[in-house]
Image 1 (cartoon, each protein chain N blue to C red):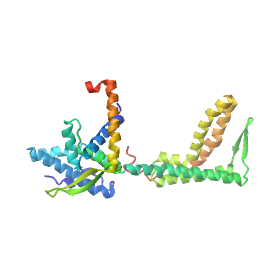
Image 2 (cartoon, rainbow over the protein chains, first blue to last red):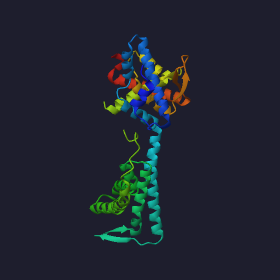
Image 3 (cartoon, chains in turn yellow, red):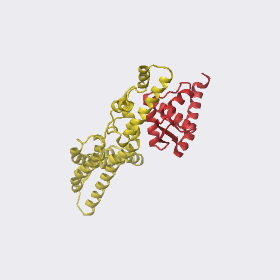
Length: 222
Length: 113
């Protein structure tokens, strides 16, 4: 009869992934295989056949290791999402909003750029601070081992929130005031003013933090 | 049927089977798999690979609780018992599956097939 614990430890190949629970998992799976083997022997099977039958309980040990990891860290995954996305995104959004408020309260004059009869208001002082916040959000997400797309979303969160708000306001505005060409152009300029340009500034800061420090193993496997 | 839906059905039915079984008495993994196989005439079958990820997930959610106990032969086994949370989960799960089979029956006449 094989050393079931050693066999499970070797085939599971999950050293470190399960942390403190690893020995317990190995012991439990080994006990299960030993029961399956014993049961087969009781039914009159030869030893090699009983071993073979027990081993048929697992088709792919790597899949089993990943499934167990996922099951054991299911709750952590929720915490991980909060730590790597929601917290950095909300912090970045808050910081960018406070910065805009402070810029306005300090009396910094915005620069108005006219496009035909429409003006675009640029708070240059505020825009200049955005790369810092983009870097802050992406870095916070990276430290929580967020994957690249999550870091990007965290860094760009102020621009993404503005995009969502504008997309919600547009149909409402069109329904109330009617749809005309000038209104649509105004919406487009608003998009450039509050989403595209701040987005570029945030992206400039976030870029250096989009690479390196891979996401947690076993979490992003699905 | 997509793989995701199939997997959700398999997982849901597995959870119900395990919770219902553990509501009767605490059992260890091999015995859970054996009893489910025997009592469903082999229709539901658990292998080590399908059973333990499910059990660990249920344990993580607080539905079942495992503890080591040696049997008369001195062999250590990890027994699972239903927690209060698992008991609370079992009733709505039974309800969901009853509604699911009734819906399937009204659509496809499953119970008369």
